[in-house]
Length: 123
Length: 138
Image 1 (cartoon, chains in turn yellow, brown):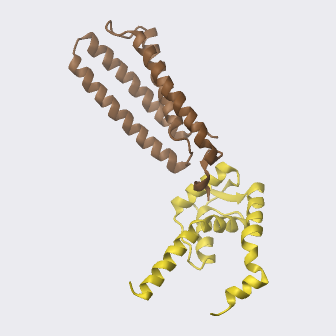
Image 2 (cartoon, rainbow over the protein chains, first blue to last red):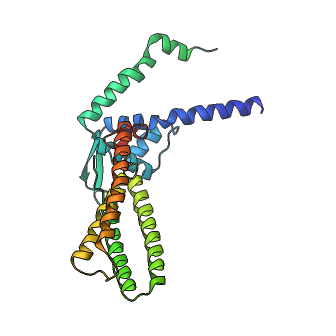
Image 3 (tube, rainbow over the protein chains, first blue to last red):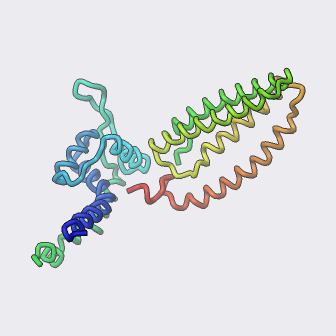
């Protein structure tokens, strides 16, 4: 295996594993941004992640149903654009608390000066 | 945990219809002594149940991945089949070659498996939050 092939295979394997748990964070962030219907969530996730995250509508619905069952997300129905009523999803109090704590424990540490310097440091 | 889901309800409706048709066929064929047809209806009944269990079970998991190792569907099957069977005898729809004792013995032995399944379900439930497997949530 050439070094280039090895590099790209390793990178995509790492990204695949990394992204698996990332979708939840992106969905939660999109709902922190405000109530959204499922296609708006998809657009937010894809745009804000610079297209590194992609999600299918059906899989988003499935994920949102799961979160709703767990009480971290809920929805209210609102008028659709010339079509049927839409479900506008939002974070519940538990969802907000969960996101806040997750960010504090797992994301904020990347903003630590030393870690930021390491990330920006060139080899 | 949300136990009675839409797909489980659909399954229960189809299963009950299947159980009634099966009971009717069984009693009629036994009464008419057409024993070879008893085998045929039993095999058809088996495949029918397999198909509806597979179809609605899959849809149920796709809608909401409740981690119950199939216990809800199994328990519904147990309750409905035995209820239909007992009522069949109570309403006197059975053939003269059938005995209610067979229904009770079946319910008893099947009941042992249901209890075992329930115990395993309770043990595995520790890996779930509100019925959803922890590793499946995020």
